[in-house]
Amino acid sequence: MTHTKNSRPSARQLAYLKALAQRTGQTFAYPRTGQQASAEIARLKATRPSSQTERMIETKQTRAAVQQIGDDAAIRPHEIEGHGSSATWKERA
Image (cartoon, rainbow, N blue to C red; front, side, top):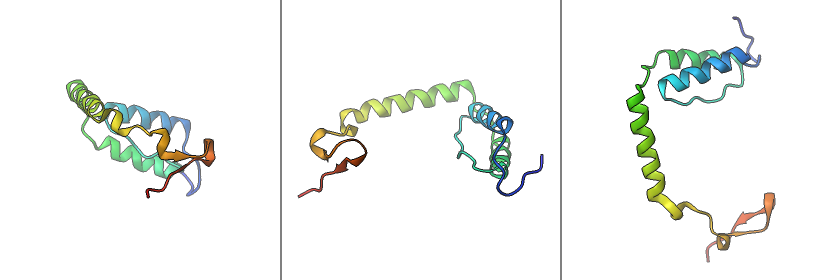
């Protein structure tokens, strides 16, 4: 398929990107153009698929890391001021 510089990625390209990312255990930058989608597809096609065992190990490691961080990563009410979209971080004294 030929893409102009500014054409949007097709639904077919996006579906294929998602399937390739799942198969390889990788993420991809969401393409704004069909040309970017083609580049991401080529990159992911050149990547070795991850095995189910590799994905399982990575998932366990990620969950363990998140649990270890625990409440340290939480935003506490005393750290912000304002509400909704106008909320900001309080400056440290």
